[in-house]
Amino acid sequence: MTTPAEITFDEINLDGMADRTGRVIVFAGMDGKLDKSARKLNALTRKSVARFVESDAFEKMAAGDLRVLAYPTGLAAEALCVVKLGRRPSLEEARKAGAQIAKSRGEGDLLVLAGGIGRAEEIALGLALRDYKFDAHKTADPKAKGKVCFMVAKPEEVAKAAGPLAAIAEGVFFTRDLINEPANVLTTDDFAARLAAMQEIGLDVEILEEDDLKKLGMRTLLSVGQGSESPSKVVVMSWNGGGDEAPFAFVGKGVVFDTGGISLKPAGGMEDMTMDMGGAGVVAGVMRALALRKAKANVVGLVGLVENMPSGTATRPGDVVKSMKGDTVEIINTDAEGRLVLADVLWYAQERFKPVGMINLATLTGAVIIALGHENAGVFSNSDELSGKFLKAAQAEGEGAWRLPLSKAYDEQLKSRIADMKNVGGRPAGSITAAQFLQRFVKDDVPWAHLDIAGTASVKKETALAPAGATGWGVLALNRLIADNYES
Image (cartoon, rainbow, N blue to C red):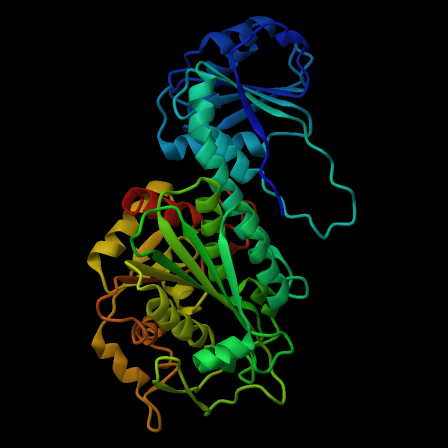
């Protein structure tokens, strides 16, 4: 997998700065005030830093912005970069600064003279997250990048704070890699194998094969994958870092490729459906992060892995299928397949683990993109308390999320003449009726939230902390949700 940059934290040592190669980063306060490190570099470069911070260009910069001073006089370094940032930045400002440093990193060594700036570990996280690049299928040998070193006032304290963040970054990278992979590589078998490999970091991983799913009665899930040669699977990942309490459960939709089945999608843009396993990718990344940072909580992650293909064995529109719960579903549109996968896995999670709470994630509907664009995921919940906790965590991590309504009135759209329900409710309120469908497979006493991440899992343009492509949205927020509310 793609691994985050290795970042070290050292004591401040300004000797030999003139001979440093690569790139050097210094910070200037919002008022242009320079710390000791910046003053040293300013002296070496014949006051070029001071001249810059006195310019109109610096005045127009926002907190976290960076400007490159290329080939500065008096330094062997190829560039001296000035970051505008207060000594006590917000989390968002710190991560933004780190991301800007990553974008201007270059290929040589990188020295960040962070001095006594607060949240240096968050600057490092922003750097690591934005430094991601998915080049697994490029034939040219990737150029090795230089080392990254932060010089800070209290390196041991910063390194200790950065440790858990490095684990989270690795979880984000794992999610991004999964979502970015093409479907001929990330088959259901390959996906399951990558998850099984996480036993090496302490997760308990169990793979339920098709025979197991048939015995359990997961007929709606199996109906999605029956047109594909790739076998359908459910993978259960357990992290037991708490006491004897019941776990929190994450459930993810893992459609490794979605043609729409017999209800075939248009050709234009179908290549993007490699990301339709985004919900499962986020669950996998969260579980990896929790294991790597040794979270003191019990958490289980379940993902349904299928491929939705048209063939002579594929499910037809009009078919009626019985779920594991026992409810029957008239399948009106085979392209509304994610909810069929989640229905059985949600029920199984509750029957087996009796979770204290449950959140499912899925790239479920195009309708949520129409409603919220690519800035926010849709949040639906039967619990004000759980949804409030999640929204608070998402806001703290800067991951956009917005709660949308659930109401029995929308159930009218799901009524079927020949079965207990239909799998689609028509165009009006498409993301809401999808959530209403899922809620039918959630027990009344289980706090539950559904996150529709169709607009946030993968994007065409870069975001603050990610290049174009998979974002890893949700790993940061869900990790914080567990850390703030479910760890002992």
